[in-house]
Length: 267
Image 1 (cartoon, rainbow, N blue to C red):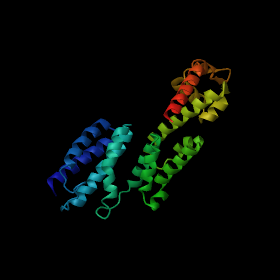
Image 2: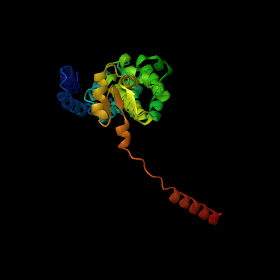
Image 3: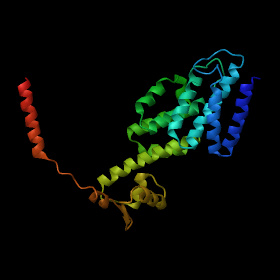
Image 4: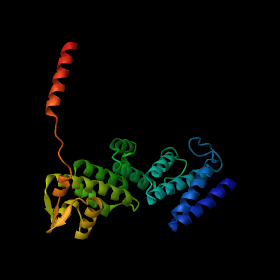
């Protein structure tokens, strides 16, 4: 076997051992070294040279980048996720017929769709979706992301918040938690504008919390301006802290008339 391939294989085994131990610091260091070594493989993108070890090189490189994507989720590093995903993607799109499909392909593609949804990059979400074959839409990982996007666009926030209970892959939990927080913050913002107060039971129901403790912790961490007393959550304090701005009506009228006069001169 090629010495370079042996070195990468041995280092990758060390990476996987550290990954199992949840030693993510060691994983990050080993991954950096692995990426440098992969640059010496001529069979990898974008060259795709037909070398005697091309299949082995492509396969192990794909495995490394798949682990890199999962590592970025474990370390909650969205920038690293994006970099590693784009390094991995050519192995899914350009190596068909050269190496066997990866069982991690659809879980990772679905994970990327979920990331785009969390980051509110809806146009890119649909672009990535259009690039997938029709058969991929039936895969549970892809289907989960698509249904989640539909629920989000429809404003069916209860389905978004409950989606965590039906994740098709454990790596999805991180992004779903981020999405749930975004949804809860949106609901909370609407609630404090629509109501002066809510009973604790109604507040729990609206914000999809199962216990008083969860609601209390959320208020303490995210909305300390809210007040809990007499079995209710009062938003009035939050409203009082946001004084209404006076609209300079006369100034706006004068500006509008001035614009109208200027337009008449131009015509």
